[in-house]
Image (cartoon, rainbow, N blue to C red; front, side):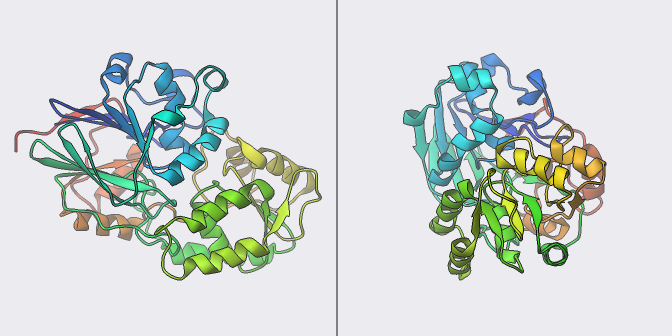
Amino acid sequence: MKINLYGGFGEKGRLGVGISTTATKLLFDIGIKVGATGRDYYPLIEVDAIAALDAVLISHAHEDHVGGLLWLLEQGFQGRILMTAETLAETGQTLKNYAEQRHLENVAFPQERIELFKAGDMLTIGDAEIMTGRSGHVAGGVWFCVEAEGHKVLYSGDVVPDSPVLEMDAFPVCDLLLLDASYGADAVSGDTRAQQIREWILQNRDGCLLPTPLSGRSLELMALMPVNFAIHADMRAALAEQIAASGALRDGVAGRLKQFLHNAQGWREDQALPRCPLLTFDAMGRAGPSAYAMTRALRTGWPVLLTGHVPEDTPAFDMLRDELADWIRLPTHPTLSGMVSLWEQAGKPDMLGHSCSAALLRELAEHIPVVRQDVKSGDMIELGEA
């Protein structure tokens, strides 16, 4: 079995993992790298490898996991495309925000080719058996465990083992774990960060902006809100679908979020800024309503709180650099205790950390010694005979 690290290793963004047997070639995720340009925007998979793929499986609809789908099709991909219904519902908006304009204009979204599955389904593609489970990161988000040729390889996509909102399924024991290591060895708990965000919101309760991804973190922010809030009007339907997603939320959470969403004030760009906290998408101010809202916040001196990854060459990065925005991480990836727990759950296998820098991996290896630090995007690993 071969594992190709096409993107997301030693870096944040452009996730792409190839898992191949002698008979079957699979690609897990096809993301883009925010802030990059040209060929660096996409995973390092070449045209001949793309043509040989049997299928691409998408873990969820964030840009670093699905933003390169139209590019993949332009490069000649003819295989199967598999994702959950929730991921499909959000992929169009992600591509609108992050696909290159020439792809949006010239590459038709292949709706008729999409094959839907549910988290928890067992998939069979060629000689590979693929277990799936809920990721805890977004509604409809999944991890994948591939069993073939006597090996089990688990690719986690983005996961959150201790989300107070979204459920995550336990990992099976595997031989190699490709784990979401976005935060490196950050040991600050989600509860602590959530309380810090609540306090910031209370200090700015008469008006502030919280840019957020349309899926995942938006629900987490809604759940911790200590005061009434507003959302961009175009978020309402998508948030309602996420809340209604079967089995996605922890027990008792859906009813509370439905009420929060019902009470949330709607806002559009032609209206005055609301006198309460406002959620808009996307999280980086590069696309969607946040691109306008962050500019308006700058003009008016409105407080802005960033709560996630802030890539270079984005409006969010510029504001943070110039001390025009605050930053408190709301964990939507595993913190240190969560990563250690997931690694132990998987049987303490060999491990690769994705979605983080080499420096963060070095820190993580002090706590999980088997984390490999000698690999990067573009590398290939071959598992020996069972």
